[in-house]
Length: 506
Ligand code: FDA
Image (cartoon, rainbow, N blue to C red; front, top):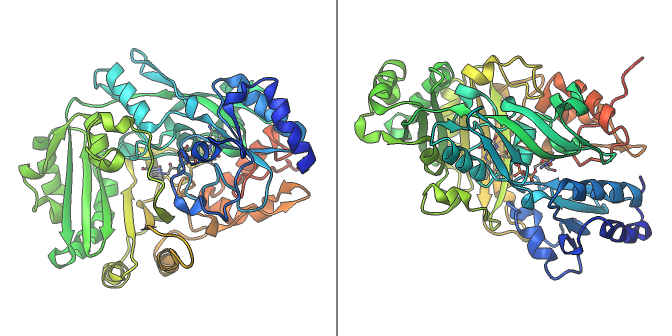
């Protein structure tokens, strides 16, 4: 496939045979910019320097996606797929290098069909997590939930295909662990379900990133039971109130707690904020806290507990989704594109020493351009799945995930340089304390600083991809590359961090 501009002029003509013209936006269309910007989450990827698509296609059924693939292949136009647009490096709608491409934006494909009796649902990739959570709670009278991420505007397509974890991760594992079936349009334009795509591709799209394998249109998922009352709390502990001791202790306690208790930590300025979800009532939670986590438990009483339904806990953990923090707010798809962000991640397998936490508080978190560190505990269900069962390898032995986040409000010359440097310098500082050989990272917290594909002979190089691929996938990287070769040997579906195809050795 060699994109040439002359051939790309034929692309919209080809599309017009199968897709209504009002669903295809060329750069010259008055609505092009607003459609493109509609779900951009990170302003770093909507600057004049950003390499943009030549078209945005907004399919409303599977045949439109099949036509986009067919026409793209025929006329040398690559496709990038966007569900919720939350990609940390903007890869669902922008390219780092000059490229002739179109965005297939699935936001109009967002149905959720619940089968409460069998605790399953079919959800289209363009639905948001908020839409899924809301529909599940409504259809089950608050008895069922789905274990996935905290932010309700995230798209189902990218999230489920890249792993996906949130407050239920210790009880029920990843979103991807709870996928039962999927519908995929492959690089030949075929519409494939689980049986038709075969076990290796079905394995690959549950954590290995959908974008390497085709366009996932919808997912059948397992819904999980939740009690009528859950308890949430948020307790800030300042550095001069013992934050360093509490965080040091949290590292060993949180991953070993009962699976119905999830306690994460946000480190910002000189404060560690402990945020928790307990699948039960406050009366049952308080004794567990006092007995298992004294450093926090002895500071706690009934007034810290917020009892609610599981669906009410969604806006509790992500109140910015609509401002008011009501359950209806989680249906708001509007994203805040105004901020610039940089993130990266680590995994911790051995508790970090107290003196290192002292340096983090006194040094890194005290800097003027400091960001946030978010620590999510693993263990229990997420750790109980064998490492090769899905592409996501961060299982038994992982204590917790660290996410480094920095946010700023103005781009332009030098804008964000200090915040980006804070993230990369802290990442360098953390090296002795985190997982090694490889230093693991979470694929859904994508970071192109971990490495980018090198294209050799018009195919992404398997060897070059190891640099970033083994960080996200450890030994599963090779099986992902073999699955890629099965379904897309020509590497039609590719981006800067897509899985390269690997031919099996004879
Ligand atoms: P987007 O549409 O940008 O897609 C992301 C990637 O998936 C792209 O490469 C895209 O091409 C591909 N893709 C998308 N849809 C596809 C489809 N249908 N078929 C094939 N490929 C497809 N994560 C987490 O685990 N827990 C959390 O709590 C959070 N919280 C969070 C908050 C905020 C504010 C952000 C911005 C991000 C998170 N994340 C997260 C990370 C999130 O899970 C990750 O960015 C997902 O990939 C986003 O999925 P979207 O569909 O929104 O992204």
